[in-house]
Amino acid sequence: MSEDCVFCREVIGRRNASIICENELAIAFMDHAPVEEGHMLVIPKKHFRDIFSVEEESYIAVHRMARELAPLVMKVTEADGMNIGQNNGACANQIVFHYHLHIIPRFCERKVSWDRRKVSTDELEKFAFLLREEIRKTPGTLKLTS
Image (cartoon, rainbow, N blue to C red; front, side, top):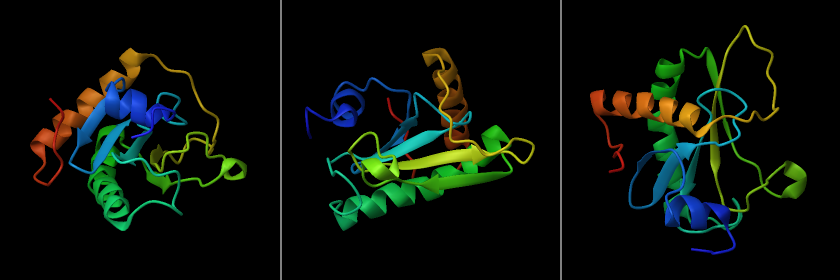
């Protein structure tokens, strides 16, 4: 855990985020500045700066969680497609230096844009609630937060 890292401090430490689910190694939460409704992040609970430093166990946990969340996000948002990816280094647009994976639903009728939107906590919580309800109905390994 790094006190200098906003994800370590606010998401993992203070749980100051719209958290979707978690396990011992990873946690998923809504991006507070999404490019589309339903944009979320999956991060390891242990601090790693980027893909070059993340340990294999944490890397696998993050990607497994993303793989399970992706079809649920598609269902809840009624998206036509999805971007799943991550950035490494400032010139690659990495803003928070804690390894993280973006899950971004996409829609055919909308032009793909990387512009970030400002949304309310209520809007993030609304989507988080819908996704947690979908997790409850779907067999799998995803664990809901308390």
